[in-house]
Amino acid sequence: MAEHKAEPESGGGPSALRTTVRTLAETLWFPAFFFTGFLVCYLLPFHNPVPHHVDVAVAGPTAPQLEQALEHKSPGAFDLHQVADADAAHDAVTGREATAGYVPDAKQPQLYVAKADGYSLESVLQKTFTSVAQHNGGQLQVHEAAPTAPGDGMGTGLFYVVLACTIPSYISVMMLLRATTFGRRKKVLTLAAVGAVESVVAFFVARGMDVIPNEPLAIPLIFLMTQAVAQTSFGLVPFFKQFFPGVAMGLFVLLSMPSSGGAIPVQMVPGFFRALHPVMPMGNLIEALRGLFYFDGKDVWRHVLVLCAWVVAGAALLALGVWKERRAARKEAANGAEAEVAGDESQAAVTPAEPPVEDPSFELPRPSAVPPHLHRMGQQQPTLTGRVTEEGGQAVQGVAITVTGTHGRELVRAITDENGEYAAAGLPDEFVNVIASSPDRLAAVARVRARDGHPVRQDFRLDRRPVPAGTGR
Image (tube, rainbow, N blue to C red):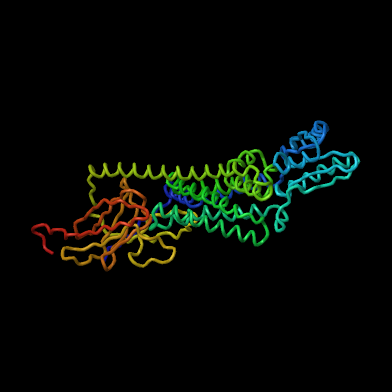
């Protein structure tokens, strides 16, 4: 039987308080970040959207006077520029050179708008220029220059199609971090396959609801965005480790969604988010799809280049992570050749604490002891397994298997079962020291390389501790 030793409970005082504060900080930082991020990144831009520097093409020479009047009424809301005639005003809207086109007239002034740019912006433009027309004694005639698909009455359907592909791309990375039997290459290919399925399904579902026009070229555009999010997120993991969920969530949810111009037109959010709009992948996909669906492909290539840049950045991060890993491996191999690792022969076997139940959406895998053979759905797969035997080959039960990191910090402790077997999961991608010890046997030490997706096996044979001369049994 293995000897069981209870862990001492921490008493009161400053040490206990520091432990409590640290535990709360380590476990609650993500919901606190999420709460703060939503307050700042969603309440700030969405609570009172107002127009900012909306480009309007005005036919005829009255543009300067009209701009002065609008500037006095709504400072910074509209930027007007003069065009030759009504056709030029219409073409400025369909060519994405202006958000709206206004044609002054004493009796029937005309306004060209694009619902594809957002219903709320269209409403603001109609309200503003209706007031202008009435002030001059005319009745405004509104013309839809770029109507949306019949199933997208509010002009926000495209945003939700893109959103449906953005968040799963990020979550897929977090879930694959639990797939310890998958190597890096297999995970990259899995993310690509998931993105391809999402793109095809999203297109046909949206098409079936008549939310988007029948333009299959949207499928590769959506796929490109899924990879921009997924591969970049995966590339960030080695550099931010346990803080990766917050970094990826901040980039692709808290910052990307408000700046996308999908739910609220980008011309109606604060300057910070307007500055992010040309950079973030979600906004670039929305603009590319708008150009493809409603503006004869205008500027699609420019937004595709930005999405490609994100994919290249993700590939660069992955390559840098591989280089960092190999560099650390060479350094550890060199150190391991010189260092001697001694086992703690006097320490009694300790029953491993039950690993905490974790939500894989928020936590990276942590080192933990797992059953050698029984693996349930959702449980981590072993990255280190082995068997302990004695001189005659019989299994030794109750041997303490201690795994330590590069600096001697204990990562996990397991106890061999009745078959002498043990298993550990969630080990870091580096060299670790494996120590097998039992009170009545000589300890054994091995140095192995734990690699994600490449389970390693380390067996031990423990000899009995010699009995000093002159002592009885």
